[in-house]
Image 1 (spheres, each protein chain N blue to C red):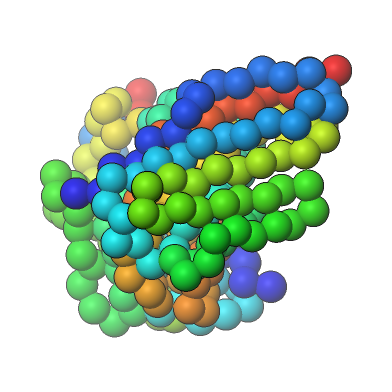
Image 2 (cartoon, rainbow over the protein chains, first blue to last red):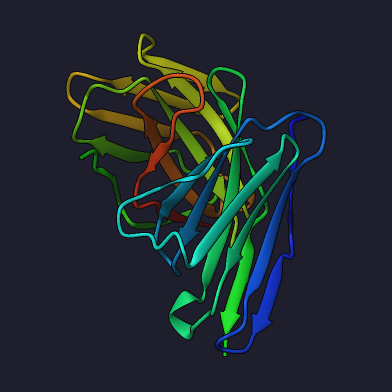
Length: 114
Length: 113
């Protein structure tokens, strides 16, 4: 149980275009969703925390106008990378809080901007 | 600001060896610590969670310990197998429910035949 489905698993886009990444909780309601970014051979860096029905809280240094997060329902959260540039190429992972202590993670999205 | 460091950054061992991965954190005011496994290009799989009041947790061949006062945790893997090859990440949270995680730098483990 407690599965988060993340799509797409990989995407290649042209510089200047926007890309949307979706995370769906399949068998539970995700009140809180976390979005992480991971560069090659590096750890996960938290980008933002989103709560259903409210604005996301962004970490310091993360451009909220560039990385748009929407958490309109308890089963869907989306991250849109707007006007993507090659430096936005990275591995993006979502995570949902489950219960008091646990977390479940999506399978990640490899974004390549050319 | 919480900083989490893992040593070693990479490790290669022959099959069957027991091994220890280390995780240290700078702020001992944590709520819990978790160990995750990440396969290349994949998401994370939770391995063990230790609450701040606990000292260790075990699951199969894995044993994780926590020493809050010294800011350290270890993940012990017994009788390593090639299938254990992956990156292992530790992460700490400061508060309880729906708290954000601060991840360590990771240890890339390769178990050879």
